[in-house]
Length: 525
Image 1 (cartoon, helix red, strand yellow):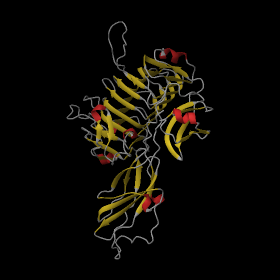
Image 2: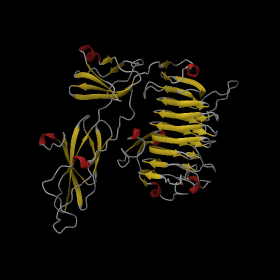
Image 3: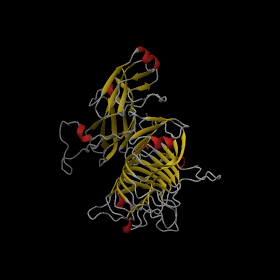
Image 4: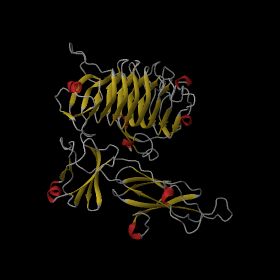
């Protein structure tokens, strides 16, 4: 199963690997100072299995910098030199080999004597070079892995449980190598593993998988998913094969996990979820939920979008944890998350997901007007296209948004568009490493449409709490500084063009190295 976050950000602290110099740098301002300082802070952000963005601190008086990269750790032999280049800025973009340790060193040059070298190490990632799964490849106690059978040097598969409970080394047989596939048994049920294929001593491929839990119910397209959920025992895990499942409203009265087989095999659920009773945990993972095209009036030809993806439908709802992981949520008429009752939810976690085209004709993207919500944790997620306000939190809640990308949201011009964030119920609030592009409304009739926060009444927090804003970026946003905040610095933001690849068609990959690897949803790095 593809880990959509194999593009892992790895930031290496330069100070941990700083080479010792033969003599100390002179202190700034000393009369003897006749050379440039070293370009300190050399670090690398690893974006994938081959690419690294290398940065360092600018040096006063430097006209250019010499960058050298060597294979190996702390090795500066000519035989290990990969490249030597001169650059004028403080960034260098490097493409190398996968699963390789490199040492980079940087020197400043100018009118004064050259600086000393400053160095650091980094290691590129192991790619997910396994071939796609075939349905049935993963069970409760086994997994079949596929790879290119041209890799004749393949020697073994290593399965390591992510919780440390098990590790299996499977030595490949000649028939495995010739076929480019092998089945490993005696795995633990319901366990997440990291699987690595070795080619010689080198890690050739890496993938995260999860074995099926005991008693997992597998559903195929054409079966009645809604009835299967109704008949399932409390705590059941239901995995849906790829396909389209028309369910309309699913009222959940038990703990349940609904999953696809992986990020590349997501089923499409044409329906919505509702909580109206006491439930411990609801988890949805690797699924597409689509509110569009549901025939909600079977007696005629009317086809109407559903209102919400998740709705607290009754005051009797008492849900401990709702987890939305690796999902796509799209085409709902009003809301992504909604509560206008007195029901209680303790925690909502939204991670690694894509939420878009929530139209906001009668509500907001995240719209919590009644009941309770203890904590809202949203990270590594993209929101785009639609809504009145983005967050409407009228109950006391600790809400946090980290590494999110937001494009063309809060773009409906009416008196109910109170901007991006409304936290009028109190609680902690954080927005960090988030990217906002083309949000809001250009020349709106309603003055508050799309601003960052309408007024102080929309940011009433706990008596000892203050909002936390850090490392955010805004670009080409409309009307955003009309309201409580009047400039980017007040919300820890700078204005930088991320260089989206094709935003109009949903491709938010960023070209700007000031953004890539740091700000926004990591899927676009």
